[in-house]
Image (cartoon, rainbow, N blue to C red; front, side, top):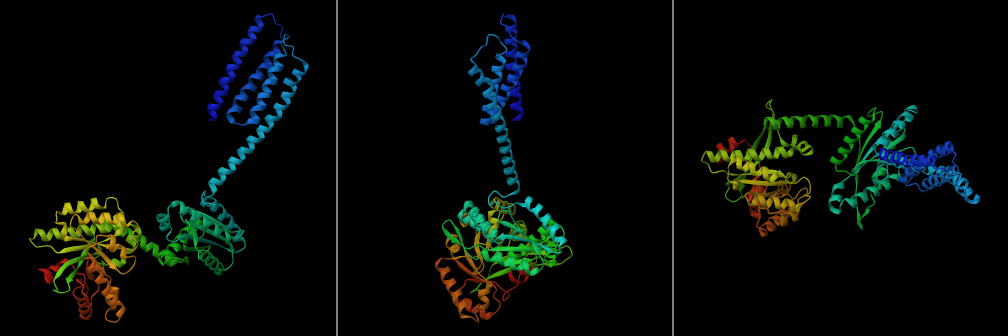
Amino acid sequence: MRKKLLIKSVRFIIFISFIYVLIVIALLLSSIEVNLLDFILEGLFTCLSIGCLIVSLELKNKPFSFGWLFLSISLLTDTLDEIDAWQPYEWLEFILEKLLFGVGFVLVIYGLYLSLTRRNVILNKLEYMINNDPLTGLPNKSLLVKRFEEMVQNDSKNNEQVGIMFIDLDKFKLVNNTFGHAVGDDLLKQVADRLRVIVGEKDSLARLSGDEFILILSNLQFRRAIKEIAKDVLNIFSEPFMLNGKYIHISCSIGVTLFPEHGMDMETLFSNADMAVHKAKVNGGNQYTIFNEEMHRQCQRKLLIKENLQQALKGREFILHYQPKVDILTGEITGLEALVRWQRPNGKLSYPNEFIQIAEETGIIKEIDFMVLELACMQIKKWMNQGIKPLNIAVNISAKLFSTLDFLEKVEDILETAAIDASYLSIEITETEGIEDIQYVRSILEALKKKNIKIALDDYGTGYSSLNYLKILPIDSLKIDRIFVDGITKDEKDKSLLNAAVMMTKILEIRVICEGVETSEQLNILKSIGCNEYQGYYYSKPVPIELIEENLIL
């Protein structure tokens, strides 16, 4: 923009100067008397003044523009004075030359002052935008780094600690999904306002990103001081927030680190605080956790397992064990549930409790689920090639996997590659978190049912399972969690709840499968209640397919 403005001004000055040269030549050729040298010099100043006027118009600074306009008129009048034929009235000459020059000079100075002031305002705004979060007005990470370094220098001299507190809202995504991002932004601003109240003069509060805030505390002499402040932070969330005309309770998780105890540089301290806040969330949220070295060791172990899982996927180290599902009246096997195992290169067999949680946290679970589905289909194909009627194999799939855009496409590819009858396959929905878009999941399940794939809802009665799922989702069977089966021989409440669940599913025409059956007494009660099928160690634990084929099926 400056380059274009400069070019435009230079062109205009050249044009005015050219016109002025023509005027000078005309005067020389005429008989008009003129003081030529003064006329030329004063004319040049007039051209420059007009050029400045053009520039000032582009700057949109009215005092500056009027100043150069008055100066241009004054200089032009002074130039015309060098022509003897120019004889204005004295009062007019005073106004045009002296008064306009004085007023123009003052306006130009005032315009310069305004330009500098506006420039400083713009620079201050830019600096604010660079160093502050536009939503909450809190400092951002770049400004926080500067303040942290200052705090460390000051507190190190006094042998005091600097506390770093990561504050992460619990279930913030649920607020966004339920009420929309505008309401989510309103919540963040309200949180920022509440946190400002507990920030000391020498402390610093900032918003990192999303729903993450960070509080840096100086002049900490004892560890218990930061514990008390962490409790204060948790307490400010005890009162509900007004969102979209409704009172909503929101909690937070806090991760705490101390300088120099937990790190000597900001990157290490922030990383350790992030580990601590993750630990607080895993433990249920609405609490604070102070970093310790065990967290770091756990993180390293998780990272190692994650890398090993990636290698296991490439090396196809996952195998399946199968647990029979048995008809509760006839005792016949109605199908199998495929359960993943990790056969490591060193011969060690790892069970899901050793790696599934990490696989879920890192997203690797999606690839594992697809591999399990592929292995199950390959087993069905093997039976078909052997001329054996396959048993239905159920595969556990997290509802999160349904959010994968190409989920159905991958399922179709696996079925097409295996070339099997899809009716021999069942999908068991496992839920560690609530289904966010139940209508979308419903559409996926309906597409699977059109391929004759059976659908079961696993671990019903625990976690996030809901009666609403039974109403909306196209379920063929319901698997009652073992926690209810364990107590039916001791607690009448468990028996009554199980009886109610069976009655409800019969009305909905859904089959009931009870998990975790370990005794004949449990089996007899389930039979009297009217359950359809069962699984458990009473019949068989999960075993390799060879044992199924040798001892139970063929």
